[in-house]
Length: 98
Image (cartoon, rainbow, N blue to C red; front, side):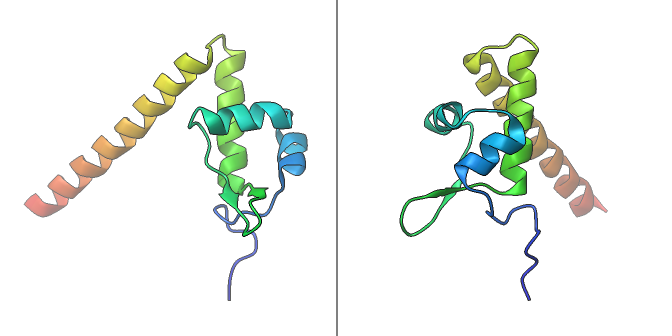
């Protein structure tokens, strides 16, 4: 049985995502065009956002509100992803040495 409320399940259309986050649909499309966001698509091409996407949109909005521009947001998100990757690598190395 599938968990309908799993954070990675794409449940929300663009208008609902916009309402939940306070980010207008046009900006959500810009985030997607810039590679900051990758909503899932239905067979018909309609964007569907998950709880994880909503959290990412809120994170992007907070970074923008702190004074960063989209280029700065891209860099912060890239650094955060690299940090997660490196932490995972360190954990794997530590487990392999045990």
